[in-house]
Image (cartoon, rainbow, N blue to C red; front, side, top):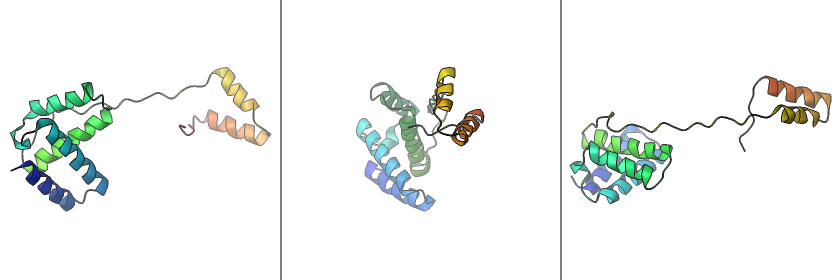
Length: 139
């Protein structure tokens, strides 16, 4: 099966599964990029080849873990659902997403925030939100 046949069959499989338009576009785009990288039929590849590609995306292209996981998902879909060859998931691990801890206000900043309230009602709302541990919008 040629790479163009794979893309055609991939479109059909995505349509049959009822995946979203966004997922279809992402999988197709990422699969095309992988095809350009390898410049050979995808059927000829193995887990080690795909690992090298994922490492290339991380180390050379400096893509985020979420982007690399998107490529991983697209390639797993192609091999599992289109080519009919399941890959060893332990050989193609997903990247752990980096989580950032929220910034914490200093004691002085908290008191300054409370003091900036125009009325007792606004001050009570700010104190309630702060005391309840509610988070604001990340702007």
